Length: 147
Image (cartoon, rainbow, N blue to C red; front, side, top):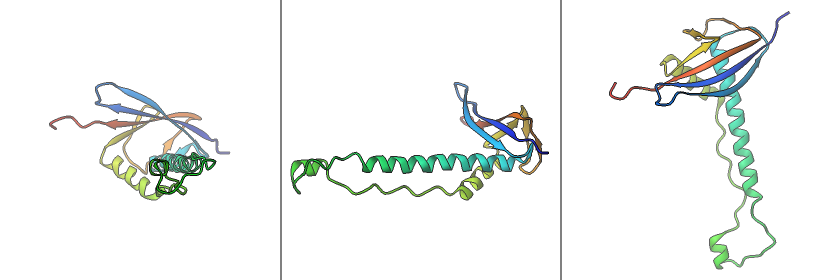
């Protein structure tokens, strides 16, 4: 019987003036054998779902902020300052496939390094064994000035 794994994700920035580590969420996986490519894809999909939901909520909230109790005359000062608008257009939704491809390309360019349980990952398709509570660190590299 395959056991599930919960990956705790962290982001770290290496090379910045102030070291920064922040929580990047969690991934629940059905298997304890996974590839780095799968981890990247699942993380990107989760982030895109969150971003798209946030954009939709902002557009919905914006469309509900104007009271229609007070009628404004067309051309009045109030109408010029606060025109009645229809619902806000939604931003285009992000494409998980395109964004995953960008993230994979960034990994291949070494824009970031991935550590799984403090072991550096070199290949996207190598299988990684996970513990029930594994940690994945996305270590972002800051380019040096002049180099």
